[in-house]
Length: 388
Ligand SMILES: Cc1ncc(COP(=O)(O)O)c(C=O)c1O
Image (tube, rainbow, N blue to C red):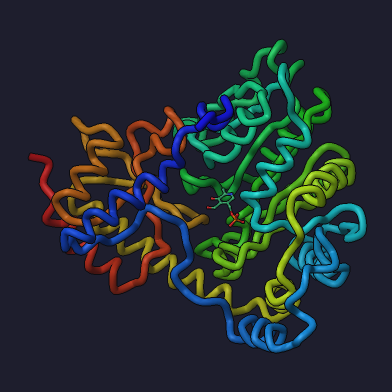
């Protein structure tokens, strides 16, 4: 088989490798507790399921979707959500497109914008798709380290001029995966200013904007005046409404970028299953109060995990948002050796920080999207872990 150089150079997705390793352990009878992935473990609210149920029983629901980039009514629902949640005004006709999950949109936006000779500015550690998508397009990646001493924000002033000249995309992602860090309007303003001055598309991945704790409400980049001149934002029903498997996300903001994504996607996919569209619309337009109760469950797990880690001497920052605790590994371990040691001794699976880039060394990512009873089991097991 002759594979293309692009596929040849593609590394296996780290979580796919992990899934295979865990399947082997399970086959050997190990009680594996997955705390490495951010897949919501709780179901969506009943009104969302009811809307989906009604749609799938409609005989007209099963053909090709008529609108590749989202029905008018779905895009209007996204616009209404942005208005209610962030007081941001978006034109659903030109400034929003629906996606088969934001992962797909991140990839295709990158293909629409980048080519050989271009640079993507990518956070490290960061969601792996930003890097993979840029490399697939033949572009270079300039990593922006996210370090604790800088509150896991990139140092935008440190980017060299010649890099900025060739940069076409700047990725930012808050609430952040994997560090759990959050950003305020002041940071967004600086990023927007940099993008404006250098003719770069600022891409904000806001996948976790509705998963927040202790009264914190993450802002949207699109709240800022002028953001739509040079920025887009990704949102998704995956984490916001516990619908990760339904595959529905959105890109909103700059009309030229949105139009380019529509052009790419209309040639590649055939749109969103109408049952998913109905569920997404119900989620966006319906009652939002259940999200606070859901977030309180995550926050309770977060507190229990932090206390359990402290008992084995690991002091991690308490995240204000996202699904993740970014925990430093004990002395004498690397990210991978610590994750392996915990998995081998206890069956509890953490994600090594290096899954997200070389700057993730020294950390593991622990997800609160694990059923509460299993979190308690994991804590008991972890307490018995020993460094020896
Ligand atoms: C930062 C970030 N962006 C995007 C995604 C993809 O989300 P979606 O389910 O919308 O494709 C994830 C999923 O884990 C993520 O962590």
